[in-house]
Amino acid sequence: GNSVTQMEGPVTLSEEAFLTINCTYTATGYPSLFWYVQYPGEGLQLLLKATKADDKGSNKGFEATYRKETTSFHLEKGSVQVSDSAVYFCALKTSGGSYIPTFGRGTSLIVHP
Amino acid sequence: DAGVIQSPRHEVTEMGQEVTLRCKPISGHDYLFWYRQTMMRGLELLIYFNNNVPIDDSGMPEDRFSAKMPNASFSTLKIQPSEPRDSAVYFCASSYGLAGGVDTQYFGPGTRLTVL
Image (cartoon, rainbow over all chains, first blue to last red; front, top):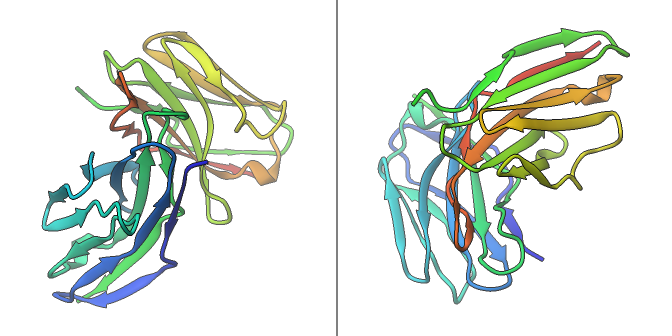
């Protein structure tokens, strides 16, 4: 079956530090990959996505590259801000089998001034 | 569009009481999902609907939970009777269905349920 594994949190950084949140997956077929972000007290919202191997999704300074050879979709940002403090969820969807996205457990990011 | 609307935003009730959570999806979306989020279990899919029809309710924890979608613009999740272990944040999400399945999901703000 499909599964998503994210690094355990919380990840604690100082403002302007470099961010990496690891995500690896197991999937049947050819998945689309997503990163969602959940700000405190809110629902999840799409941050970025990639639909095929070697695609790079980007938004709000965040990037993630779909690496089929390592089955990974790591989230990166060059310089984090306090406002980036949130929980980040990696997810995948395959067109074969289950048509519904599978989510990881989420990784909490805390950015200090 | 106002996005996915959920009500109430907060609910505090006593064990044994009936609880009804409500959701209005984004107009035109044909998939609706109910999730539960807790610290222990993370985000769990409870049930989802396609064109108002329940497709998979295997995530519903037990018979105390039920969900309905009487029309394309409204869904309810009911817990009867409620128990303290049901305390969680419940999210509703909606999406368009594509040929390859569901694409981006749009989440509501959630209902924080506390059962005393």
